[in-house]
Image 1 (cartoon, rainbow, N blue to C red):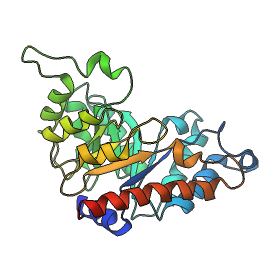
Image 2: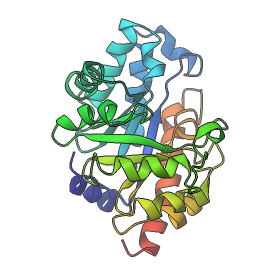
Image 3: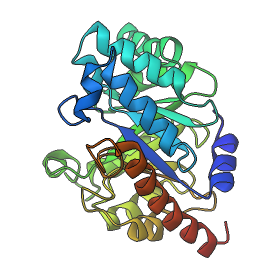
Image 4: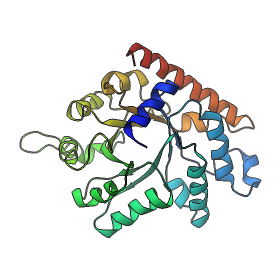
Length: 272
């Protein structure tokens, strides 16, 4: 998917919502466990219920690969089922050197045909650039995360008092462009989103942490907005596990609609 196609979907749906498909067999409704493929049946129902209100889906790969070949089959069926007009994110956090990254890229962009993959930048340029060899595919690079461990490395400063995450942002823009590079920026570090936006004014941000993790949608928009919206805000648990009963899909639809309405208000207020 191209940048312009993504922007058009945001305008059309009045939404910049990404639904995280972190599908856990311990949390899905019990009646689905009797089906041939419980993970796919759950995802299918969630997609049917929420596709009118979101512009992206983000399956977290760990929730699938832990089930071995069956999990990969469920993941493939899920990605194939998502409408082509909706942006897909393989949340895999890969990143290695040489042929390893090339094969990771081939897995997610050729076999699974995802629009994007999350990538860890720690090993540097040659661990990231193989993912840019595919047309209309995206790298979503970890930049500033919300977890407690982010404090271990991301805020370490050099002799010029420049934090590591800022150096990653500046250097990585030599490898990609706003047409194929996004950044992961956690919602619970709202002012940090503003710092990232100063360094990467034109790039899209994938922002997890709104909802169950305590991030504020208004803060994300205030600090992270750019002229093209520039935001994909992810919600996982708050939508897909809104209910564990027979009405789970209906409740997911309601939760997605509520977020979409809040996003529509923000888009209107920005004259977008």
